Length: 139
View 1 (cartoon, helix red, strand yellow):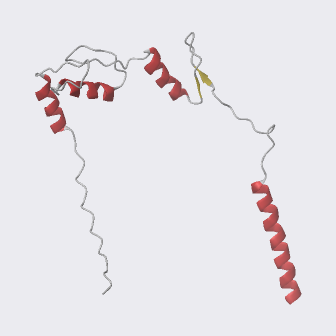
View 2 (cartoon, rainbow, N blue to C red; view 1 turned 30 degrees about the horizontal axis):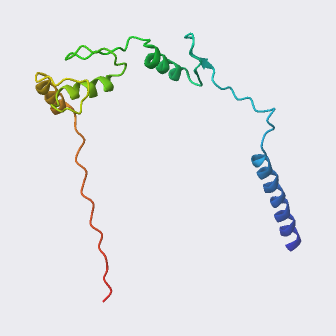
View 3 (cartoon, rainbow, N blue to C red; view 1 turned 180 degrees about the vertical axis):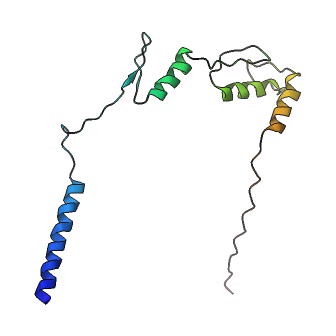
């Protein structure tokens, strides 16, 4: 009986060792078929390549001005924005009478428009205050 248990235990150990070897063995570098940079930019002089097509699409929109998503500022007419969030940041600068906004002129008519947009935007719920940790004093 003890001999049978030891024999089964040894067989189990060998089986576990074989399966762990299979998992840990690294494939030969010749076996690995990694496809990198399948999507290449077709603009002349641009040699960028990307693994995903959506990354190539974003690259073309950002660097080559391709695509319908060109946004312009209604206050100054600047139309070099390819993303809505960048336009919104630019528009907010028109509502701030601050000299740090180089190149962006303060437009008083922009103030009520931007303030209304900020009020109507959905706000996150205020976070709950954290509970103060109680420290035990040794007396």
